Amino acid sequence: MHMGVIGWIVVITAIAGVGGTGLGGIIAAFFRRDSSRAVSLLLAFAGGIMCGVVSFDMIPGAMHPDGASEPVSVFFVMFGVMLGYAVIWLLNYWIDSKTNHEIEHIDENHPKTADDLDELIHSDHYARHEQVSEDGGPASAYQLFIAGVVMACAIALHNMPEGMVIGASYASDTAAGIAGGMGVVMAVVIGLHNIPEGMAVAVPLITGGMKRGKAILITALSGAPTIIGAVIGFALGTLSPFWLSLSLSFASGAMLYVVFGELLPEAILMWRSKMPALASVIGILIGLMIIYI
Image (cartoon, rainbow, N blue to C red; front, side, top):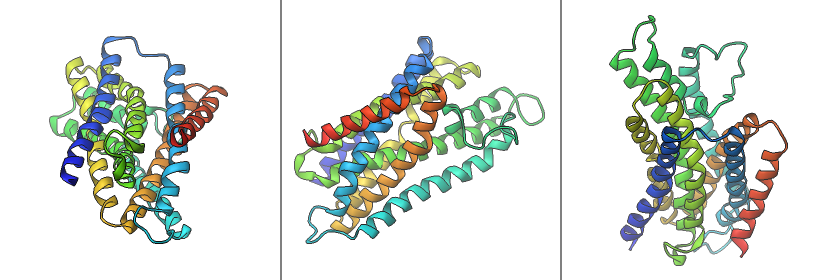
């Protein structure tokens, strides 16, 4: 049974991850880039929904996993949330420390927290290597490959937790089936929020001189790690109530890092007003409504 379910989860997550970022890449390649205000509101709204779902569905699910005879300790759930947050934060910090010194504008006068989605996923790092190498000449194939690997790793860190959320959501309610429960809802939400992210990946690649088709392909493939995360989240979540609790709490912490460490700061920096905050609150309330209606 699980193999068939995993197959469907892979398909649904591929549509959300690869399809969402790919659509963003197509929009960036063939249409004028959407206004930063619209992208800001989209990111803030998606972040709000994710925050609501994590707070009102995933963390309560981690405390009362299916099959458990009694509630899981709140301290265990808190540990899982902090573990998920810390793992993604540390891996992001490591990648940043290896790449930021190679980008000219990230110096002592520039905030260490990225103020652009291009920086968050290091597509600016790749674009720079496409244009120039360390000695001022064209970048070698090896340098370009390493820059591409760095970007792929950064995007994987960004997208794998989103996939884990989908997988763990399906594992928490296997009785609801593929089309029911929170799993499909999270896939839709993550797919929508991947559109502006896909635009952010594609724009610096195209402005760096890459052909549109190649940029769209790379952008679409950048959503593939979501599938890996979904399979891991579901596989762990169906082992036992203990692993379901850990999977849900770890995915919650990882998702909270993405929301509060990346999506919301980026949304506010793209449009310095009260509107992104309002979009986030509306997103949280929509998340609450999705869960209880």
